[in-house]
Image (cartoon, rainbow, N blue to C red; front, side, top):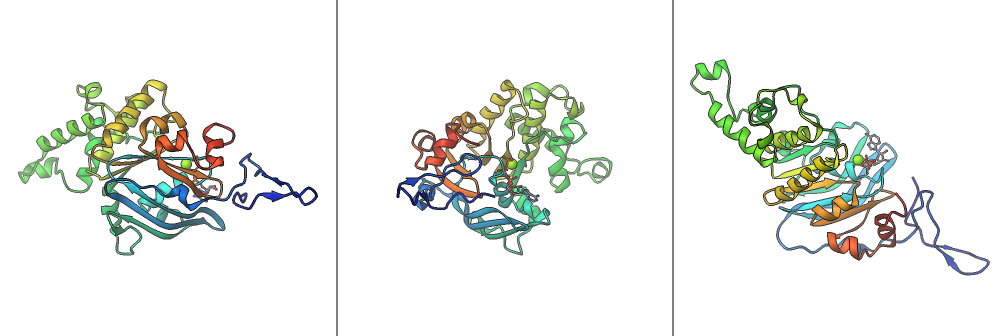
Length: 305
Ligand SMILES: Nc1ncnc2c1ncn2[C@@H]1O[C@H](COP(=O)(O)OP(=O)(O)OP(=O)(O)O)[C@@H](O)[C@H]1O
Ligand SMILES: [Mg+2]
């Protein structure tokens, strides 16, 4: 990994400072801590302090501190390998599943320490839904996909035994399935075929189904890792509209490689660069129109990455 935060190189023969470049075309600059100070109104959903992640000896995230406001869309952007997915996985402790990963620092969700050894991971992941890059519906019916979480958590009882015990929640389930599919802007397209296999849906529909499945457990937060990168422009624009709507009720944190998408749908943008550093974080309009870091400007104008 290249070190992108060393001082400008000085040419000893001329005494003139020359801005050196890292191997991937990223110029060298010192990060000013003010670039990541973001004042917003309202409550912080996440408070991240001095977060560091290593995979073995590879330092993937370096001293990340930031607050993520609730009920808004936060975009994470930056070149490949700068730690965006790693950061997202820190928020719901999915990195726990990666043996090589070591996490230090603090992540608080509504003030509660996510990395407290007593944190109930099932509860945590119920509060924080996740949508991945490739749609991954279960090979089950559309209805079963949406109802999967609530059934697993015992919030919905259904089937022969439940009927026998007089606890069949079929009506409540039907209501939940409709509400979540509407929430994911998919209801109109699938209401007459809820018992069809989800794998028969288009990619964009499958991704919205995965969003409906995430909504079904009633989370506070939805994490999305490049949710539209495998989709065509029409499906992408449906997901984008949906993300903006979701921010009324949920805290959405979305990784995207698509600058226009970040600019269109997010309220604030965090730019990660080489070395797993958070270089700039702030209001999305400010980041795209008037970035303070030269490297961020170079990145968003397509000079590297
Ligand atoms: N499971 C893992 N084991 C070892 N190293 C990993 C693992 N996951 C990520 N890394 C390393 O950590 C660094 C950050 O990876 P990460 O996947 O978070 O980047 P990213 O910004 O999401 O990239 P991309 O845009 O390509 O998805 C990279 O150097 C990567 O090789
Ligand atoms: Mg990634």
